[in-house]
Length: 167
Length: 258
Image (cartoon, rainbow over all chains, first blue to last red; front, top):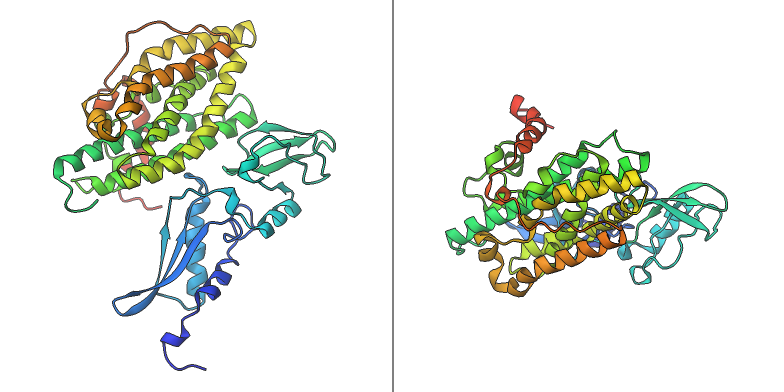
């Protein structure tokens, strides 16, 4: 039922669902919502019109994916007919892997990336191999293929793997 | 920045934020020079990852500096259109890479300071400075872990690695005083909220450096004499060459668009 412009506006919940379909460009099995990068979605009134504001927080300061993600959000909103929106960046509180969803962690594991452990747990526990599950693994480099990952090798199955760093 | 902020204060903030941003930008450029030349693949990636973090931090600082700039320059103009004398980074970060030991000694000295400084800045009265520091600090911790690890590994390594690490630690030592010695601007910006932190910075830095060098079985340099000038725009010859490379494209093609 279409009764006018205003009622055509999607709900905040609907927008969250759209954003949940925006994949991380570096790790496409998880969405930007899974990663906890989307901090807020809200409608504001600007010059009498409703404007959507999406607030995102970058993962790492220099992550080149951040620019791509903003572009992907823009496209996702435009494709659904939205023209009045702003994408704002918020630095504080700083992004943490504790904001990652359970579904996101599960998807990482299935993809072959060891998910981040909760921060309070620290680095005391070994990072289990995402392939064979062995706890006998070793860190090769704190800096992996993207800023968010460290590089590991499993001593049991001898496969190398990425670990999404606890941050 | 709120319009009621008095002009001199704003100018001081601009200069101070430039210092923070220029340190990150210049060190990032130096580390980027290692791309494809790292001693092993993992290290190649580590150095460029750190370069990327610092580049992102530089971007955050220079975006803020641009907002404070009376001349209304954009962040890109600040990065690519200033000449050496207008840069406010400390001398240490412009020092050439030389070999891997020098690169790690430079990084270790810087990272030790960076962690302490960012931690102090979490209490800044300026919200933007607090926010950027909070974000940067999480990354700076990885950097310090990495550079300390190498100083220890090379110092407490073979005769050759130890000799070279010690040479780097000694040669770069005179460039470290600038990090923790406050000049008038540092004092003006940091004095009120930070007085205790600022005077303790030197002690905290020395303690941090000392503990790693001891573990690395390296001698702690005892020279008191320090180089100065970078923070005020008086740089070594090395910065000009670095800028020539970094700024070449936007200077040769001023209208170039990404």
